[in-house]
Image 1 (cartoon, rainbow, N blue to C red):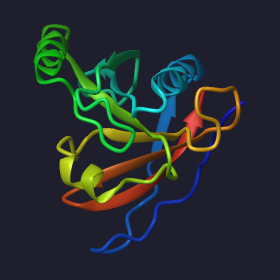
Image 2 (image 1 turned 90 degrees about the vertical axis):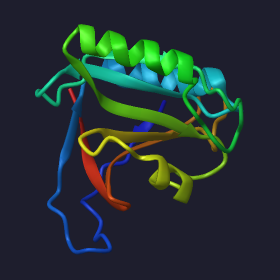
Image 3 (image 1 turned 120 degrees about the vertical axis):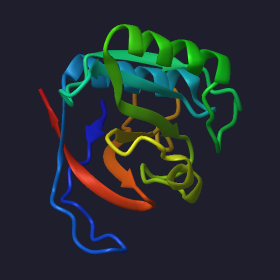
Length: 158
């Protein structure tokens, strides 16, 4: 079992941001959580692609954490280039960029904030700190990260 933590937007450094919502299908979220458990104790990472201009996540693309680390993730540059080219060919964008935290809560770290380069993406973090690879509870939260400002958003599972 796992849970989605759905809260209102947090007040950012430059003011209050309107509450946004990530709408995602249950099977897609299940795939993300399964990937996070499978890669534990290392952080998992990947994207959920969707048609350009729709903000609708449609297909999960698990990616390799080139760091193979429990505290940091980085897309493999060769794989990322291949995936981004495929997105272009299919008129898709990374609607969701996800990764896991293996020992801390599902909240962006300073490193996560510094690396957030897709202002239109939803940044989903799954914490496997409580359960590891087992079927125990995980925490799943979504954020927008724009110019260093974190805005938590609600998650609507369909």
